Image 1 (tube, rainbow, N blue to C red):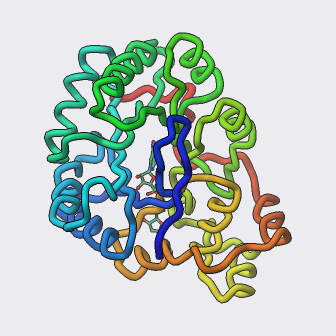
Image 2 (cartoon, protein in one colour; image 1 turned 45 degrees about the vertical axis):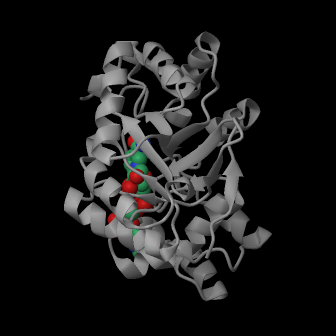
Image 3 (cartoon, helix red, strand yellow; image 1 turned 180 degrees about the vertical axis):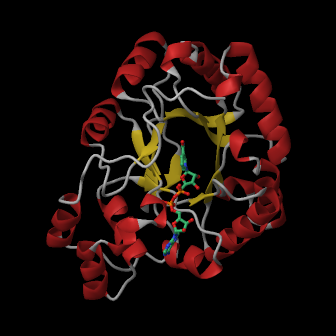
Length: 276
Ligand code: NAD
């Protein structure tokens, strides 16, 4: 089950579906990433704060899959924002991963009150110019901070990774991304597997297609153009979540899911979130 790529604004290809490892301890991450690579995933989403860059890197290296066939994302943690601190934090991440470059480096949160994300991003531009990252982007950036960033820096972010699922559809931000050429990447795409997968409309669509609710939600993301990075440590679910390229939702299904928007977050509001 090969995952089709999307083309980022600098021409780099990114698999439209990848594997997320938030809340997976380091040793377990090694197992889970190995299972994911065996199942056909070729994109892995980690972060310095997840504490599992080592396990993730070990699984990548041990897999035997050529490095250039795997798309690796990691993220700069909040306490490392600022130009020099960013360059040091990147070296640490690369070291833990045991890799020579990462495919995508993201500013994890904007922390607007600290006002360091522009300088941080300038360090990202240097890493990009030096060829140590193939693409640079952000995470959890609202429109206001994206506008400031693009106004004061040269490289338009390739990606903004944001909380996005049927209960939080992010229409305004998705529209802004489309205008600016920024890819939308959905975190917690399954709503963290909580109530979302039991919503009657989603269960009904799953029954209609003889699929699972998780597969239906992932299909919805893919068909509206999002990059998705579902997480699981359960091998059968890891395989289930990538087996979504042999069916499609019809316009009626898509409309039924679009009607579920409640603008309801699971995670914090990025405009005020400020920890670490
Ligand atoms: P998710 O929406 O991917 O849900 C994962 C949970 O859903 C699993 O723990 C499991 O309980 C359940 N699940 C998974 N597959 C299932 C299936 N097939 N059937 C039934 N239940 C299933 O949530 P997430 O882990 O929060 O988000 C995915 C990834 O996004 C993370 O691992 C991480 O890489 C990234 N992320 C980024 C940020 C950020 O600030 N940038 C924040 C949160 C998550």
